[in-house]
Image (cartoon, rainbow, N blue to C red):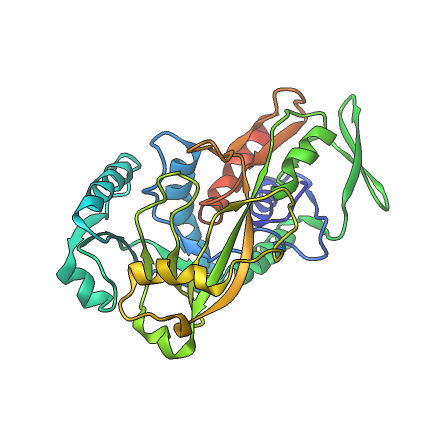
Amino acid sequence: MIGAGVSGLAAARAIARRGLSTCVLERHPRPGLDTSTHNSGVIHGGMYYPAGTLKARLCVEGRRLLYEFCTDHHVPHRRCGKIIIANNASETHVLEDLLRFGRANDVADLEIVDATFIAAREPFVHAVAALYSPSSGIIDAESYVRTLLRTGEAAGVIFLPASRVVGAEPLNDGIALRTERETIHAQQVVNAAGLYADDVSEMLGGERFTIHPCRGEYAELTPAKRSIVNHLVYPVPDPSGHGLGVHLVKTLAGAVWLGPTVKYQDRKDDYEHDRLPVEAFLEPAQRILRGIALEDLRLSGSGIRAKLQAPNESFADFFIARDRRNSAVVQASGIDSPGLTSSLAIGKLVAEIVAEK
């Protein structure tokens, strides 16, 4: 296994539980440092993705598995619900489209609600209608990563942090992976390298594809304004398909994040250069909340999505399959949103593909 984000950790754990020897190589000194712990930690409902896609199927299955895992292993989480709001009548058709998507994906608990329903739950939110997803929620992403690591080790997974793969040679019965300190003989290699999955696939002699780094930045409400938001509040999705819109997330610690934005960029490790000013978040905040002024906002963190979706494309699915160029490689690549929600289902699918050979 190359990569120790949530999908890689979940896959390693699932493979080891099948009784197969499993080793995880991670370029950073601790797992989840890139994408997995640089997101808002939302547990998605499954209404955004086209029916029949991996994102649709694995999001819905993964959400169920994730809630069970969090309960069983005491990972902090909250099934708080989400509303996707229409600011005006012209946006209500988008809610109807999302409702159809959700029902096609077997998300049975969605409903379109009116302004009275919204006001009772989020009195400061400006909306004429909303799609209500009671099964959406929030998770402590860092605690989840630590728990996957712990339960993976208990299942027999060997984790090698700070072990960057610098080369690979084909063998008759697998691949020799060279790190900066040693060479490891693997019968099969799972490419779960996140932002670097395209580079790793090329190194392994696998299929060629491109990961597009897409930075998302956050602001947050000042402490004095945190109490005016109770749950997850989303606008209708960006028409480009590149994001779900700048939205509000009430974290488990009580902070209220506003974001993420969408910015495709060249570098895969650039979280801070040319950051947006706090003023850029004022209009998105005011579209959702009444009575917000610039002094109610301050800048927060950022993350980088590992997208297979190019800037001129509206959708790209997860790439989870045995590689067509090198059968010793299993791809778990292009895992952007809803990757956190889907992670345990992704791990289960990857383990099934590995076990087939």
